[in-house]
Length: 578
Image 1 (tube, rainbow, N blue to C red):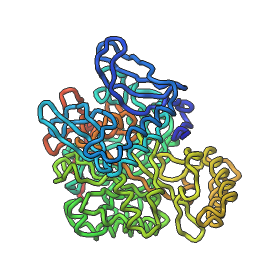
Image 2: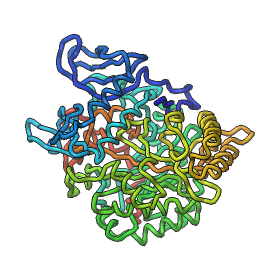
Image 3: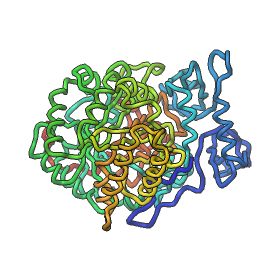
Image 4: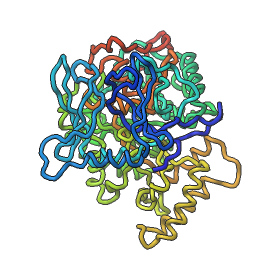
């Protein structure tokens, strides 16, 4: 497929350049100079298939391994076809993962068994282990066909020297810029969630001056960001949160999103009104609608408090994204209910499912079976089964912006009667792949305008083949009129005016010590900016640089660097705990 960059235009520094190649996968090989066995990056450059190495002895080297990228992809997909009658594991490739006990990096076999994908590991110190990576091998393999060239930031924090993931920050070998920066502004929280992926120390609020410097660094690297997420801990416990929102509300940033459990929003209407007045968006953690789900995932019954937060968000019409951490056998039966809730209100813009990552102070110790867990295809199948045809498995496609195993998504067009229809029902994404982007809503860009015009012509010509074609045409024409008025539109307004035309459902699987894949980390586009100037790929930071990857007290590897937790407190007094 031909995909354009997720967002190349910016107000500062000109367009970000594409990488000079398309990163496809990791593959073991040998350094062309010293012949040391080493893992390399398979990339497509022009019409050549290359394997790029960062050799400890020779530095950057490369070799050509083919002259037809499309043939390479076909062969890759073909080797995953398990012969009829074969039993047991069918090896399709190798990559680097982690020992689930000591976190050492290992070369592991990627195998198919009974239609599922596993990592087969053997740590010299801890022995063999095995982990489920995908519940659907066909989805896993076909996702690779969505690979596309990444986009470079304007500047990198580190040169690639020791290799991934040691050089995180991000380094010159990283394959994607920052699509979603997540700034952790406090390590205080009013909950102790059993699934928490961070290591709250109750020690620091990021001061506004340091936060401003971090935003400056981010804009220097990126030029323009569609969204900046403020997280924690619980960010509403930060005594100067509204000042941080003001700092981040600058022309180069389209949205400021506060990721919150919502407890304070439901209790403090004046605070919620101040959030509304600030122009910030809310990303509300909503892991189900029942007591049992809340107790298992968040540590106590939050049903009433979540309902209070939802009521406040609706009353104040605050643009909202919903975040659902899915845990096998705990709340996966509530996926359909949350989808219906999401589609019922106009102020809900995006729904983000996150299959649980067993990492962090809580999540690293959460009882689990690495061979029986929910993955991206599992979310898709449950969404289809629990929504009575509203969603189908074919409505979801891998996001090519990140590594295609990281995220799956669908966009849903709002029809004039208030219902929604998934874009894959009427869009040929082989032709219009540029619509697949790391964006909560469809932005009003010239690229999207061209795509929508082409889609209108296509739907008109195939109206007898397309479900609800007349309604789709009316909705598309309405969307064009609203999103592209006959007057100049700035970047922030371009985001806002597209928000009521379509919704999105994302499925983002963060990695843990069981399913960590160095190949995926290389193209991560969700990053944590740090006070020391680094911008850290999320899963590498969580596993190697943060601490508590396997639960409370887990040390970082001896090669990793702990990022500073902040630069002083914002207040000499402890925050009010809501």
